[in-house]
Image (cartoon, rainbow, N blue to C red; front, top):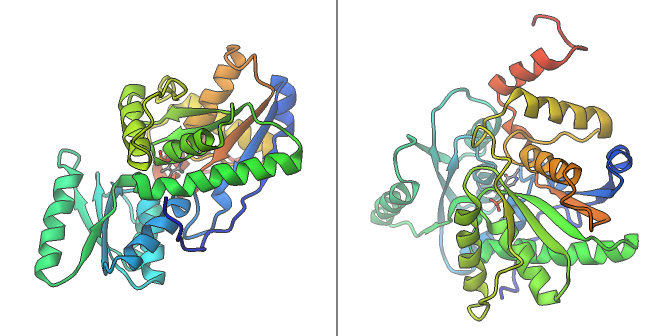
Length: 327
Ligand SMILES: *Cc1c(COP(=O)(O)O)cnc(C)c1O
């Protein structure tokens, strides 16, 4: 296990009770605000990057190459930390460039070198090629996988699990489950491994936002085995892929309406790519009785508000009866 990490995230993040929803659903629903970890470095990625960037600094690399979607939260958090620690930052972003907004805007403002590839190209191959080019310029690049989801980054959520155990004690609740969005698997892997080493019965329940449950289970097992090759039993891995809907960063009107309802009931804004889908999954599954044996349920808000693109904001505007002026 890695001992050294940066201390740049605002930790511990608070755990709050969602009062209205708890009453409607007859459960104690809590939310852990990992969207409060920072501004440029908000969300779950900074917990992972505290380890990744420390590792890069300790091992003599001067350049980072990483990847994600055009709207990637991970890319933006990496760009911010690279600026702070004087590391050259290269982002391989996949997709169509639509507008200079959100995370892409921040990436550029934070000084990252941006390389756009299209949907059909391999991100890994593009990063390998770039790495060779940079080496030929006498740079020492380190490739960080998508979402910093490897054994290094997962340490951030082993820590977060320990933080939750302490907070549960202070709040005098026992969480029956910790629920979260799964986009590249590192957050899930860290939490699961944290629960494993503490030998607790808390269930770790993931909601996939893009790939199937079986793809994510394999990915998570791979990361956990990088941390501890002796673990062979994974029957407590629980990843639900029934709430992906139209796909990565795509939302139906019904989903958008759900995010509006939660915002207006609880004062909490979920993001349209990760937390919105996962939280909707959680609420649906509770309504269907899948959590009947549970009382205290924790959801981790992993951030992502920059994901409300101009396109999505315009669709939300049309769904808001209190705001129907033409702008
Ligand atoms: C990346 C991300 C996730 C998913 O975490 P993984 O570790 O990649 O599975 C969830 N929520 C937000 C806002 C993210 O940016």
